[in-house]
Amino acid sequence: MIDGVKVKRLKIIPDERGRLMEILRRDDEIFKSFGQVYMTTARPGVVKAWHYHKKQDDNFTCVQGKMRLALYDARKSSPTYGEVNEFVISPDDPMLVVIPKSVYHGFKCVSDCEAIVINTPTRPYNYKNPDEYRVDPYDNKIPYDWRK
Image 1 (cartoon, one colour):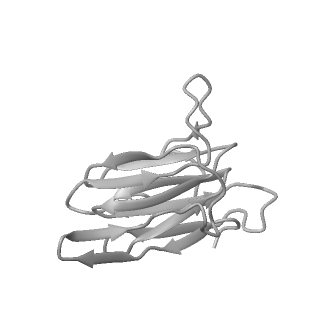
Image 2 (cartoon, one colour):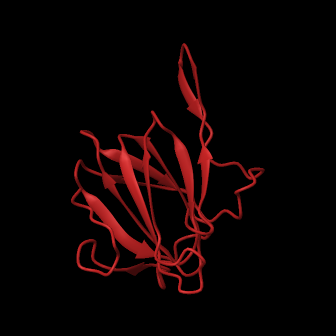
């Protein structure tokens, strides 16, 4: 596992009315701080990658469909420099993945329906000076192939 990445297995509690799933609590061991909560989606086969943040950690989960989340550790000072992690997340295998700052990440919708992803970053989005650094999903030096 990439240094600093954490995974929390999520529990779905069903009853006759539907389901409940806690994603992140402030009393969780993995909780650092609250910036905001947002939803992003991807249609089947669509890749949203690669980017990293210098100031924030992300907390990703998928609440509809299925996403393949990939992480790449480009931090030269990290003991896991150069490592890639991959997670397949869906309501059938629910988990929250903590992505530390400076770790590249992205996801691909690998279901037949739109994937809905919830992120709870540790800092709010800064519209004037976004903490987001991107590279092309396919034309880069990251040893990962989104075509698989």
